[in-house]
Amino acid sequence: MSAKQLRAIAIGVALLLILWGATERWARRTKVATTEHLALPAISVGDVDTVVITHETDTVLLVQESPGTWTVNRHRASQTSIDDFFQAFRDSVKPTLVSESPSSFARMGVDSAAGLLVRMTGGGKTLAQVFVGDLGPGGDAAFVRIPGEARVYLLPGRLPAFARRQEDDWRDRQIGAVAPESITVVDIHRGAKRTTLRKRDGTWVLSDGAPADSGEVARLLERFRSVSAAGFATDRQADSIPFARPHRRVSVAGSDDRSLLAVVFDSTAGGFWARKAGDRAVYRLDFWQVDQLTPAEDALKPRP
Image: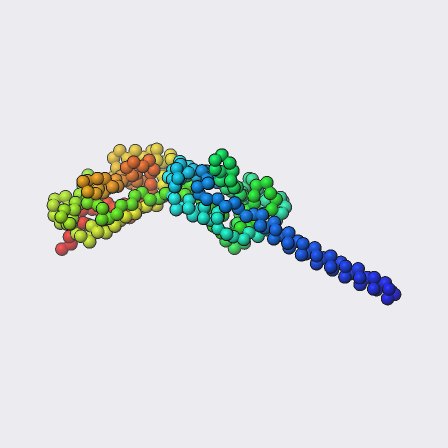
């Protein structure tokens, strides 16, 4: 092979290397640019009136009934959960482009059949929507895709976890919250037995006027600072619990006997169902929770 031919081959190889390098740089720039396309729109809670999260078998419907008041499938929603969800949506994260082929949709769980579709609307317009699919390697991120696009990204952050929440995870578990210092009367019914605690001249007395154990009373009052449920009855279960003859009842009142909180309890094999006065929700509480809220009278008497 002549020197001229070798020189031509060397020039050709050099040109191929230059072309390959330019292609790689272009591909990297393109990948960065397409990654930025996932940037979700800046949405505040005030912009949105409805969030629909469509699962395979059911739907979570979050509705803003009035400013700062949300429901989930017609039940009162936790405002903390709502705030955290919108914060997660706004969180600055860097997604990674992992595929641009529709053939990967089913494998990554971002197709219309298996993907969880999160859609936000406001004023009758769709403000944002995204498919949330399977968890990625490590479990700290999930595959996501914008409907109508072929690109699939691996998105870290809390948004994928919120998309997987079921109805009960969004509901407000707080049954009531009463400041202990505002309570002047506690009325407890355990079956046919009734115990009334009343504050008189700074001292707590029992039904018969005898003094109560101040330490036990203080602990009881503190439990009303925040009364939270362990879970909820299903709509079918709630319809079958009449609470006509509750196994236990407790109510607390303030000055002038003004009611602050009243709850009735119906026992089950695994705990208690509870309903608060003025609230249609039926909550589930564990045995120990109800025992703490409705102690027997002997437990409130001074110890020898």
